[in-house]
Image 1 (cartoon, one colour):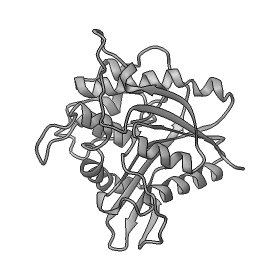
Image 2 (cartoon, rainbow, N blue to C red):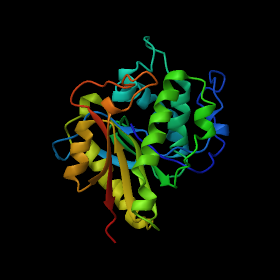
Image 3 (cartoon, rainbow, N blue to C red):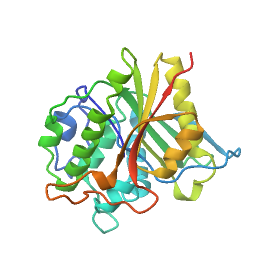
Image 4 (cartoon, rainbow, N blue to C red):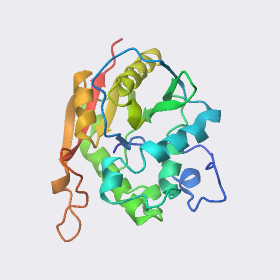
Length: 263
């Protein structure tokens, strides 16, 4: 999964604030990347859909989409069973995280001719990470999601993007997910390409994405992204020397990719 962040979150609430058990959105800094979903698109057919920006009034629909197609299936979420069994079960901290990624007016969704969301890409700006563990990690009440946050922060620091690419305005892809019945039809590719257009229009210098999935990593490579950091899951260990995350093959590592924005 992927993300990197550094600024204050805007004050937004969960869809059902009565159900929320966390203060992540209100108190934590904004996180940038979480991860890409695990199914890349190999075909580039013209399909009956269009891409539009995620508006404030779309957030509940987008969150419902992510609950169905991202929360359970993303490799890191899946391997530690982040989402409990049960049709209506969820992780409120992950919901907050997803909502925080919609704050900057940079996210997009693919919508079918019937008005159904069939793909989502959540984007944001990236600032340099703190070497110290941020408060949003220290204060996270969900032990499983806290493991993911620690991992993402570790990757953020080790990838060292701002030192490798100094004085660059960095755009990051945080979450991308496609409806399982629409995978293999070019949806993820189209969402990334449209995000690249936004980067150019808004004068970003570099686009970054952290891939927890080998399949989406291949998609990024086909789109001209270059790997600048890799962390094998087998090398990220707990205090007794065991791997914390053990996704199924072919997901063997988290890879950070970057691409220069063409001016």
